[in-house]
Image (cartoon, rainbow, N blue to C red; front, side, top):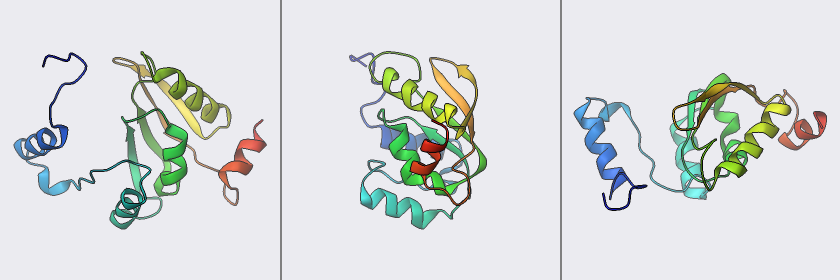
Length: 140
């Protein structure tokens, strides 16, 4: 590729091709959209049940908190989280601040950073009976 930061001209097409190549295309439900769009949120909620997600990977924009607010109730207790771009240029500062805040609020448990700045850890969620706002206030 001429632009060193982009590995594909059409990531959805390439993803589908790779899923087929590895024989898992029928095991994957692709939802192509912005994580915060109402249509995407609805499609994800339709496909999944509350508390069922065991692995959640963030590789998008720099608003981890927003996506956890949208989908946190779908995550199982101790769900594994992978958050890309924790270290690096541009969006890393915002991602680090949000992740570190969630760690200090005991909603995330960090395990480490690997590869090119990818954060790994687990979701502890919001204590039962509390809203995310109440949980934030509890640990400040």
